[in-house]
Image 1 (cartoon, one colour):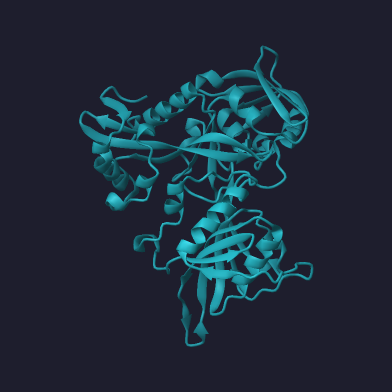
Image 2 (cartoon, helix red, strand yellow; image 1 turned 90 degrees about the vertical axis):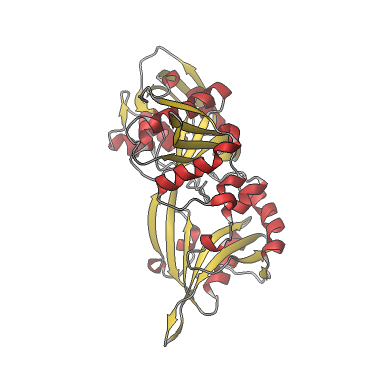
Length: 404
């Protein structure tokens, strides 16, 4: 619980300098100043600060976004960001106060989903966020690798263009693609400046962004200069590769793999990125996985019907949610022809789980059966965990390509 000396309120423009200062202390960084990227997307009426008397000691904000869920449907979701607590004020309930204010506000507003990227993995499950709702893989591979014989590369022209020429085309392509990829987010105009910000401080010793356009896709990357007396061995660091078609995907990867003076490609992408199965020697593609998006079910009965399901099921779920008590209790979860209905019930539970486990499986990547083996899910009626696992699974791993 938060101690009695603490108070919380939405911020005003006059609070922005202190807001940045708290974040800088918490993340061990320098204050970004007026050109801060996050200021471009901050929604002040959804940003909160915690005070100890007159001193600001905690921050958090919500960005209004849409996320694609299974069934190629779009659902509103609160993107939780800039959560920070000033050193010296930890373990006083500051984060709990921020999380409670956000989640209770979303509940009152009818917003059924929240999501975040976790700076530390041990914090957010206690607030009901489910880890590994999407996964992220760092792919590293050498250039010049051939594709296997079945991969066709077209003669489509790939144009290297300026940022100004690329942006309108990229916006059009992204608008088509994000609606088909589970875990991808909508972008407002300012989001492009945040995701593809190209200030010197954003480059970490790499070049400015390079932009290449395919008729059905695009790629954005930086270059890290490297080499020795044997010649150049530059590294291509891909920021985005977005394609409307499988053909564009093959063409753009071939473009990168054949880049002159480059020795390797690095790309934070989906765990199931198809390039692993396109090259003739997949062992040369190194993958390092980590958690990405964490999902929080704010309202069980509103959230679960937002997506489509892969098979019919009829189970009673007993949900534990101490942080948002309106979710606790038993719910009859019924799916027919892909559509879900969720109602309160007094019937005996077939499966028991906490709200974080439900968030982890919501996008269809993590299997509920894995969480049963991890002692996170209890099956009371044999066969129900397997049936629920199949119902929740999607046809492709969910993936969120942008940090907010």
